[in-house]
Length: 288
Image (cartoon, rainbow, N blue to C red):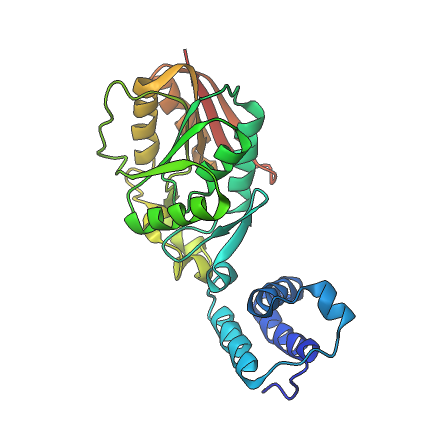
């Protein structure tokens, strides 16, 4: 069914009805509000106060093609090119993962429990969009933060986010599975949200994730699903300062195994922490 009105309120209602068949009414309303704000800089309050706002033919086409992408399961964050995370707006593209609420909670857990000190050194391994590294830099003043990622395209997005948000974070290309840091390189805090979804779990994933988000940042081989955790715990054992801390976001089914990896390299005070859904989602530990 075609849109028969150029009145924005009618257009919104029309497309919410279409989207609701796939995503439900509440999610569809939220996506339409995000689109309208992104495309026309009109928020829900203004639309409520000015219900007779009308769109031009070119604007009608803009919103039509954006909704068409949504109906093909393209994530709204890639369409708008941005996502809210820890109180800031980050640039995202299909070269980086879309940050999840669990990852936002991960950052807040670190802020709450890490005993920060001036000029503490923080490494974010697998930084992607830079959302964790940049948020920690903003939350922990005077920290010295470096983000590492194997993808140069991801690092370009991370650098754009640093510029956008006006903070200081260094980024470097590195494959954590093969990188060798100088023995003198030391950190007070190492954080990582590495790939942890097994290939066999793909069948449980939604189309918007499988078809659009970078597989390199999501999936690991079923034969060695803890490959990144094992390598990073070994790095932490060598490069954390005394009393330094390591934090992971994890696959909920591997909490005990990640805890064991930390203990295998003599990291102590290992804790498995639950997310807001009650799932075992984070692991923290410390170097003696």
